[in-house]
Length: 96
Image (cartoon, rainbow, N blue to C red; front, side, top):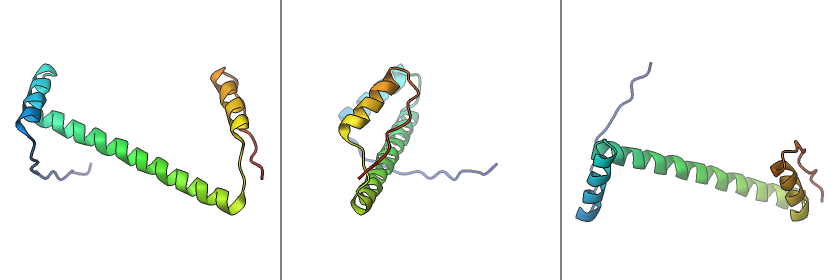
């Protein structure tokens, strides 16, 4: 098992946020430290996912510009509607 190195850091927050964090931590039976760590962890995970999605979109746009391959919004909507209805539909075939 690999040991994780933990470093301390300091952040500056105004008194109103500090009070809110403390109140929320108490209601969750957690420490303010735990609550702030969890908030930062969730934020970083969400932003990493958002960045991955952005990179996927940029790659898809580059591929579309290079090949012209696409599906129409109508084709995509029809496919998504079938999926929503529980049909195991294959995605539409891309075309120029």
